[in-house]
Length: 368
Image 1: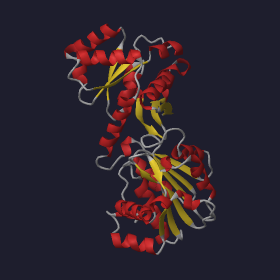
Image 2: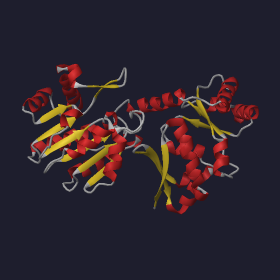
Image 3: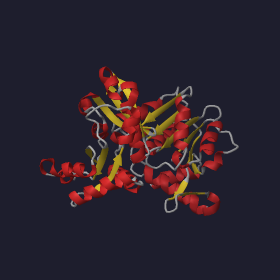
C-alpha cells in the first residue's frame, strides 16, 4: 500500500524515507492537519504487516469530543468507541483500500484501533505501534507508550503541537522533545507548505485568525484597535499588538522598528493603509506610535518582514514555517547575525510578539 502513495511535498518525501529506513526504531511526524501524517503512518504499518516485517499494526489514538474538548474513553462509549475508531481508519484509507478489506484486517486483528490506555502495563514484540493525535494524550500516558516497545517493534508518533494542542504541556510536544535526543529516532517536522488536504489551509488560516481575535488586549492595544476601526471602518481588523516596552527592555535601537502591529484579514491591507497611506498616518498620529500592518496570510516570511526591525532582511530568509511547537525562520549564514540582532535582541523581540499573538515561539536557523 505504501507504494501507492506518492509524496506530494518535500516534507512528505522525507517522512516516507524515514518510515522505510529499517535503522530507525522511533519515528515522530509532527505538523498541522492535512499534511498526511496519519495516512503515511498507517500505510507504512499495513505494508509492514503485509510484508511480514511486523505481526500487526496497533493504532492508539484518543477520541475527543470537540464540543467540550474532552477525551472520551471506551468505558464511557462502549461499542460505539470502536465503531468511531474503525470509521476513522476507513476514512483515511478509502482512496486506497476498499471497506471490505479494512473490515477483514480488523476482523483478523492484523490491524487494531484502540485507546492509549490499552497499552499500559503491556509489552509488544514485533509490532508497529502508531500513536496518533498525540497532542490530545496526557504527557504521562505519552511517556509510558515508549516503555511498551518490545523486541523488533517500532513506534510511530504523530501530532500537531501548534494548532490542535491542549493548554499546557501536551503529549505531542513532550514526545517530540524526547525523540529528538533518542538514539535510532528521527523527527520529521511538517509545516504549512506540506499541507495537501483540500480545505486544510483555509481551516488553519481561520484557526490563526480566531486565536488572534480571542486574545485579551491591553489598554494601549485596545486604543490602537479602536482607532483603526474609526479611520478604516471598511477594513476587517483582527487584532493589535503593542511592544514598545519590549523594545526598550531589550535595547532595540533600530529606528525602523515599529511600536505596534495592526493585523488585518487577507486582502484588506489597502483598506487599512488607505490611498497613499493616509489612513495609517492618521492612526499613527492619533495613537502616538509607529505602526506596521500585517495581513493574516500563511506566508510567514511576510510576518517576519513586518515585525523585524531591519526591513530588507526578508531577502536573506530562505523559508519560515512551523517546526514542532515553534516557527522556524531559516536565514542565510552570511546575514544570520544581522537577523538575530546584537545579543539576539531582534529574534527575542519577535519571539515575544509571536507568543503574545499566537502563543507560538520563534527560533532562527542558520543555513548555507
